[in-house]
Length: 120
Image 1 (cartoon, one colour):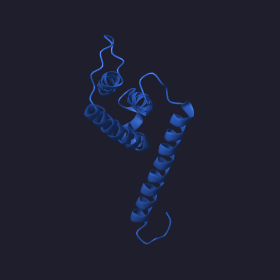
Image 2 (image 1 turned 90 degrees about the vertical axis):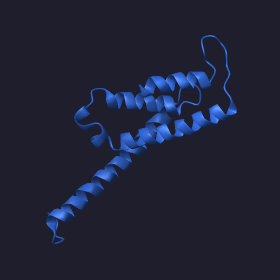
Image 3 (image 1 turned 90 degrees about the horizontal axis):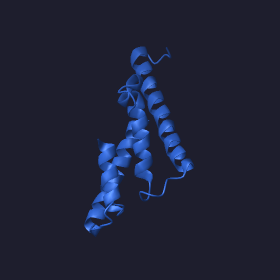
């Protein structure tokens, strides 16, 4: 639903409507950019925490849809695709952060379980 809503709003803001009518104010464009940025941050957070947002690949296809939506959010306009290396770089950054988050959580759990500071 978010994907379709974003696509509809993006096509409206960028003026790619089927009827060719474009009546978007500067305020609407600014608001769209703010929402787009918030959505990008949310999607990056979901990808970084994929183990908890999409445990065992559930719901089915949600991670793939999230990656697809992120790619659309990164587009400058509706007709210009984002270079694959930009998307790949962002996903790499998210996965590096995810590895750090997982390491931090595991090391914190090991300290709690050890109690005496000895490595378990």
